Length: 474
Image (cartoon, rainbow, N blue to C red; front, side):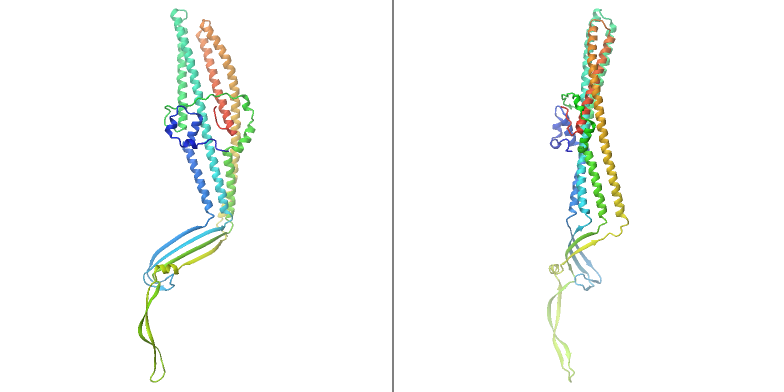
């Protein structure tokens, strides 16, 4: 499934500019969280590592190249590697060469490594999508909780306002002696109770704001306000799609299922890689090198040195046969000449046949088979969890809808009851206790209605999420 939200834009928005907004919408919160959440950034690093691993697996197909150089001195009698003669003095030597090798065949291990790395990269991307979706749902929950607490606070303030008006009216009646002071005291006690309800509602609202800002990793809740959208209660038809239908779509699109499926495929390729170690390995190697030896000499010149006797006759007196004599002068062969003369090249094919490796290959194959079974169990667990979550969300949405309908009827009835009690109270036909009782019942019913409304809206949003729809409150 495509990633739920686009975070590229907000990644370039400075923190101060975004935080200075007058009101934050749900989308602002989601975008900001996905761009700044540390866990998301860590998962993005895992995705980058998977890309690097993929690149590394691809480079395994190309030849390697190594350059080597050495410079040394030898004391004592040794055979010089370039002159192939004994040297007994201190001899300086240099050795330079390049070597390269490439694997031609290894039981398709290199190709399977590339396939596995590609799948692992896709898996890390789906894991990132899953994390982003979870954060989005959690933010939506916290956002709706603030909206609910705002309405609870408004209701509590309205109730207190009405009671304060009744207190003021009753005070006047007590002053003129038409109403007993006990009625005033009862109303003042009711006002004190409702004032406490306002304080409690405000505290709950402040706490819900704190929870949301902490989820966003903001330093403070000062000047942080959310946008209050107009939330229309969905119609009953929103639940016409069955859990089975929702699951059929979700199992094909949810990133946690895609990730689990790819992990099964990756483990299957891991089995092919393990089996590939039974195959012979054919490689091609080549090298190019040269060097220098201080023991290497070349003829510098020839100098006459008189006559040398080369023979004598048997005659009497004997006749001596002579020839001109020469002395030979040598010098060290220059580095440049040796560098060209000592070039050596090689190329070879190498075949390595695994005969026995201490049972390591068979052990790896057994482990790979177990890894496949484990991945399959993980996939089935993910599917079961998804189905249960959809079932639970559907059941919760149905229960919230039933509660919402029931609360609507209760509020409608209690409004009439309260209106009737208020009218009778104003003319002195009911006491303050009965009046407060009607008022409290209405307030409780309205609170239940709000709770059912937001619960129903959220559960529907969760079901929409499983159907691939973005989380929106408008």
